[in-house]
Length: 150
Image (cartoon, rainbow, N blue to C red):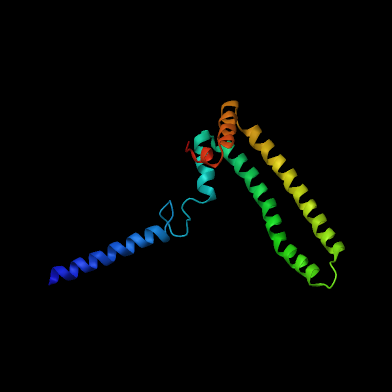
């Protein structure tokens, strides 16, 4: 009878550990990590390129700057939905409002394009010829090339 209780307690503990491992803990084993998130793939690419700490710092700054610019584009999506909804609610379509929305998007996309060009230039300048060739091959292979799968 006592063995039955010990076995049940062990089974409950095993289930709790298995569930927590799948749902609560990431690749580094700490709570809050998301496993295979964006930073995991970023570090994987840097590892495959065999970058130095100085190169990683330049690349990370370029990617972070590009991410901030992309975030401004995402923030704009909410106000865009509101403006398009108000244009559609009117008895007649407010084309001037829609033109303003599109003009605002053009300006944001121009900033994003400029930021992408700067980031690409910084990454290109930080890498040596071998690393640039390796990165170009990974990009050309698509998402699975960046992940290291062929």
